[in-house]
Length: 218
Image: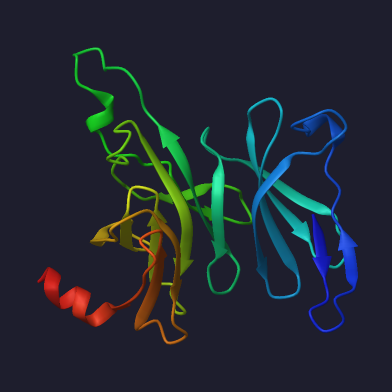
């Protein structure tokens, strides 16, 4: 993992992983996503050869690893710091197969560990956000991207199943579920938090108004 200067395009620093974590001989782990808080802290989501998935926090100035958080089995595909940098939002993949002891199909249950809010200092999960399975598979949920509003009160997810989920950050309540015609790859709030844009494989970029969405839910 490398940190670059935007102005000069020079390499500023490399961040070292243990070779024993590698996904192949002589390689380090696979880094799936990164996020940066100011000029001080970097977060990374990686997968290693043993099948574990790790969220790491790094000192951007020294390159030193500060903390490790073991993430869900499905790993982390996207992450974003909340304003202030004390919480980190992550999105990834979760899978449920088989049946419960009373015969209920697990694939019909909501997936709680695909999207999580973490306390950066303690490494504890603060909130899990319910979501539904990808209709194409029925037994998994995969989140491609996450975004946080400028005031930190709302989050939105881009999902492989074609949905965009909007949540209250601190209660975990789902406010709305929107759709693209295909898989959603990216979401991003505007600077004032009143709108957000989504990008999908249906070759469209859609702009959504948060106030209009709230009115429709009344």
